Image 1 (cartoon, rainbow, N blue to C red):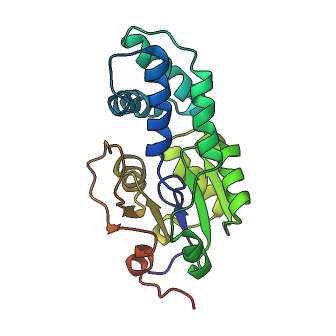
Image 2 (image 1 turned 180 degrees about the vertical axis):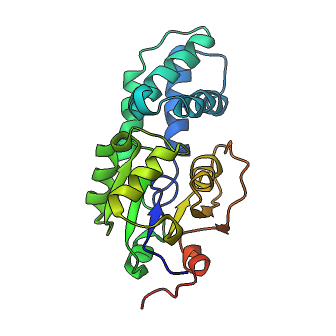
Length: 230
């Protein structure tokens, strides 16, 4: 497969997923409010509100991921009969977004990959920039939902990445861990895709069928028919 480059998701793909961070915040919320719900159930309920909101916050209706977190936590807790100040909890999540552990194979993967990479991530821009800089990740471009004013699977974030890189859509492959956001968005754009199907996601609302499936970043090499560089 001849490629101009790879579009690569950040959270859950290059870094660990946010399950532990979200559930830790939900433990705090349940403890502080006394809500009659388990932290795991709260994580799912809040997550449904959160992911539903992403699809409504594109273009002129765009708001940052941090603000979506604030609003959906407030609305979720109000539906459970509790008023909360969302800021302390969302700031804890922001700390995760800026300091997530890398997946075990990520450093090796970047060392072996000799194809240009563009990060395409549903994230606030500064969060991704900090992750890249702190970990010395060899990426050529960064496109975030904030810079594109668009959340995957919306077309505009992928169009922004194609415009920034100059890569041809038939010579790009998008890699990510969400069937809904990553695989679904790539399919809408006519871009080939790889689903990184790791264990440990809280849930995935997608039902799309990926072109390729891999258990880790290492599986990308076989998906694109490239031998890792020595």
